[in-house]
Length: 211
Image (cartoon, rainbow, N blue to C red; front, side, top):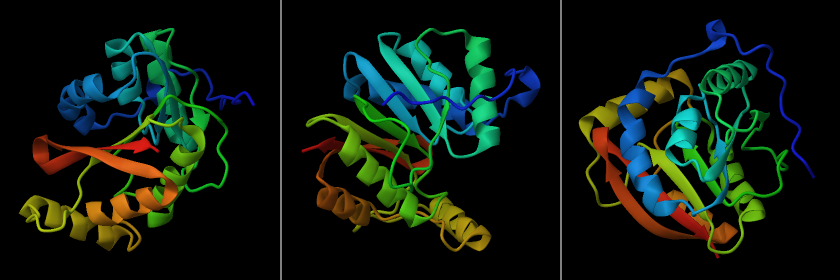
C-alpha cells in the first residue's frame, strides 16, 4: 500500500512553527544517528512536530529517504513549509500518523525515529509506537527514541523532575517514562534493547532493534 500524503496547503513561510530545542539538540542527535541509522533506505519519523528535525537530518544523511509524519494538522502544515523551503529530494510529503492507532498509513520502513514524543503523549502512544515498529521493521532494523526519561537506580536531574511535574500538571497522562518500563514493553513486542546514549540537557537516546 502506498502512503497517501496529507495535503497541507501551499507551505508558505507563515505556516512554519519553530521549536527552539531543535536548534540546540539536532547536531548531537545527528552524531548518534550516524552510528545507528542504516546506510540506505527510508527513515520514518514519528511525531515530526515542526519539521525542523526532518529537513536537517535529510540534509545530513542524503543517502536516506526521510518520511516525516505527525497527527496534528498544524504540525503537518509546518513540516510541509520547511520541506518546501529546503527543496530536498529525499524528504517525502508529510503523512498524518497517530502513533497510538492500530494501523498506520505506511507499511514499511528501514528505521523509525521518534524525538520528544514519549513524555508529551499518553502511554498508549508509546505502546502504539512500539507495536507499529514491530509491524513495519525488518529483523535488525532500528527504532530510535530521544528525550528525557527516568531510569531505575539512576538519580533524576532536578530539572527533569520539575519538567515531569509541569507536564503532569498540564495533562495527567503525560510525564517522563521509566526506561525499564519502555524496555519491557518493547521486549514484549519483539524489539530488543540495544544501546543507551546520554545526551546534553539530561536527555537520552535509546536504540531498539527488531528481533
